[in-house]
Length: 241
Image (cartoon, rainbow, N blue to C red; front, side, top):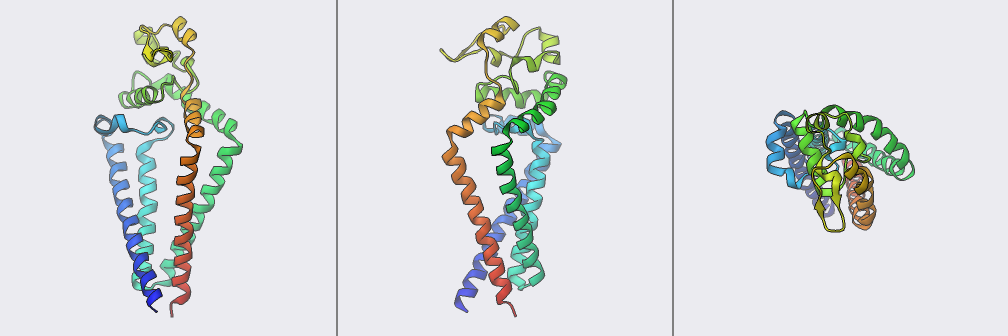
């Protein structure tokens, strides 16, 4: 009985923290969606290098909603000893766990396919919005500066973009000299060809491979927490009268 009470209390505390995280992510996601420029002004230098691949605001709202629902179901189910809530909590976690494993397999096995798909989506957006959409341009500038990369594939992604049409040069990050860590300006097509700066997708993959142990450790930790939460929810479910 003491063991059951302890596990129940830990379940409530753990899911209350998840609930708070969900609320925080929802708030930030709504903030980014409504006023992205102010968010980038404050957190621009700390932004994720992968921000250009997703609509960050909607992603945070979706993640926050899932955590909010999980935290509520887990906390409510454990506190009121509601079997339905505990079972829903278990099945949502199970679906997330399976989806994460499937995503990891796809990412490892079909990297080339993912690159081709993202190229079809991202490159046309760069050609259309870079230089005309302020938030989009700022996110890409932050990413290119942080990763020391150029475009999604290379400098050719910016051909026909509003930035090139207006300034008649490529973004300065496309003329980054790795030997002395300087940027050659103005970044003309000839200089961009000569510097041949790597695209951000390949640079991101390179960084992930370099930090594979850290990435794998974080993924394993998250997976372990999810498994533990599922086991605890089933334990509570089976011990309820």
